[in-house]
Every structure is written in structure tokens, then in C-alpha cells.
Length: 148
Image: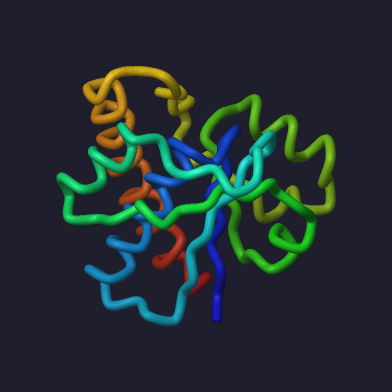
């Protein structure tokens, strides 16, 4: 089974929403042989998704209520076929610690996806819209490149 990994800072906002939206994209496109997960570069383990993230995902029929944050470790990167990060800073930090992953680490979008942490539901909604667009494009490119 192929694995996709989404990474942000704390694994309670952006990467959680990206994981849920990515799973939806895979389902809508009939790709059942791909597993999606998420982690954070500075995550505190076992934190739930931000309530605003849960609310924004619930509006889309997606449930992140059982999410439990994970701190990124090398085994998760090694298992992934592709790793998407939210910002240029995430990319730099990740490659500083795991330079061997350079070939598989990609920015989810050419523009950074701002962190909505602590923001309003509207800010999370804006982030989710940016993620939807970026994920649709990134996963379409990934599948059409023959990687899947």
C-alpha cells in the first residue's frame, strides 16, 4: 500500500484537515490502495484536532474527532511515498533533520498555507479552502505522474 504523509507544525490544524481532505479526494477518485496520515514537526503527542478544524471538516461531512496528534519521526517519513508540507519553513526544517527524504518531500502549494491555530472558524474555513485547492492539484499531479 502506498502512503502519503501531510506535515505541519503541531498536527492539530492544517495537517489534520489535509489528511481528511486527502482521504476524501482518494475516495472520490476511487483510489483505495493509498493510506494517508499526518504528523507535526513540533507536535505534542495525543492532542485532539482543534475544535475549529473539527467544525470546518464536519461541514464537509468529514470527522476528525478521533484525531490524536503525532510527532514526526523518521520511520513515518521512510514509509511514505510522498510527504507534503504546508510551508517553505517546514520544508527547510524537515530537510535539515531528514536530508535523505529530499526526493519525496514537496510543498503542498507554491504559496505557504498559513497556520490558523487559535483563529476563528472563518480563518480555519479559509485555510480549508486553500488546502482543498492545493490537495486537488497535488494529488492529481501525483496520480497522473504514474506514482500511483
